[in-house]
Image (tube, rainbow over all chains, first blue to last red; front, top):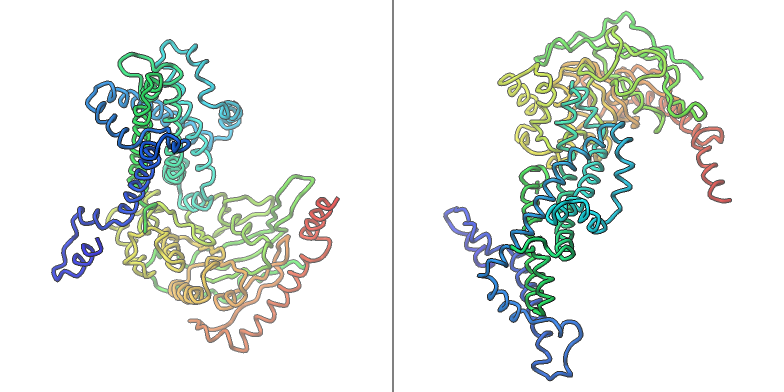
Length: 287
Length: 304
């Protein structure tokens, strides 16, 4: 790896390194992969300890969990099955719909709270009473309100992201340095200029922070809601229902497969938000 | 408290506006008058008088420096002149017309930096003209680039403010203010927070810029050496509530050079100003003042 870097920089002809070479010389990437490998190895050893040394050597906790190789085998088995992928699709659809609606309503609502005193006086108190109620506490009530299971899950998911996004947008918009606004005013900015050129871009970092946190909560909420409601339709109850179903069916390997799938899904979602954040806020990735 | 009597314009007609390529209409104008202005904050039962019947004449084409003990109300004064806040009484006139709110004829260079972080240096500079649409397209681009080169940021115009050093940020801010063609530049402790070396360089840079076109300038600082080095007229403020204690005409020759600060004359000015500043600063330690009240209420409420 060091060699690659060395030959690349000392080559007589200056040439741009290919993205593959860059990837290979990325030490953080290698360290990360090493860490995951070590983790899997320890898990494997811990889990198979009793097979190697006899039943009395069953380690607490880790000894009861299926080994990574067993999980991997179970995974390979269900990978070609449509039901597994339907679970992914189902959960992603719920997360995205709840999350997008929360963004669409939450960002303008947060900005309105920030810039208009009357709006804030009217809507902030009820908002603050509803905010501390955990989204999962809404599950029974929303199962009653909404005509379909699907709508109640979407509603609870929406709540999970909504409050976090609003609070972040409000906080971000209210803490913009007053000197930016004053400088713009001196230069002849109208109310709309102040909003569109100072307040909105100044709030972007908080919008993305809220989105990242909100996305995490959305995944938590979706899975719990799927477990509680039974996942809705038979076509695939989502990853939450997948885990619950595997547990009821006694397949511990599949439970772990479901858990890891959620980990990957959450990682993909937050990577997407980070990627968007980098595109929208070039001044944030300076050095 | 002794009311300042700032001499109205004397026989001298003021310096002839130097021929300059920058927005000729804004230069040599910019006569700012403060007439008996007062400002206080807080409720009626707990009124904090910050400025009390202050009158001051800021003459066109001159660099007027305001010094005062820290916390005396200098920033409030800047906010009033810039139009961010309104005085309780009295009036502020720019070239005879009352100031009613913020406008491009009075540009402020703020403490630390107030460059907009999500705009590049170039975008910051063209921000004002673009908003108003009074300078557009090629003409705007050329003017912005010319100013950026002038302040030594030609190669940095596409960097974001956070990528610039402290001194560069202040120069970018100067360019951003100048392009709007203000009649008066208001500098609110603009070099605060810079290290001694950068500060010295910025003072000389700023002086060169001023001496070149002599745009009316109000410079607020708490550093007495900086004040004497830059000023045509030095206004010494009282402790809070602020009013004018003394106006000293600084007759050091221009163009200024930092060695002039060690002349006997400069020393004289400094001694005069320091005597007043010291006397005023000591007032904060008297038991009857706000600071002492604060300290007292703090200790008693905490103790019992």
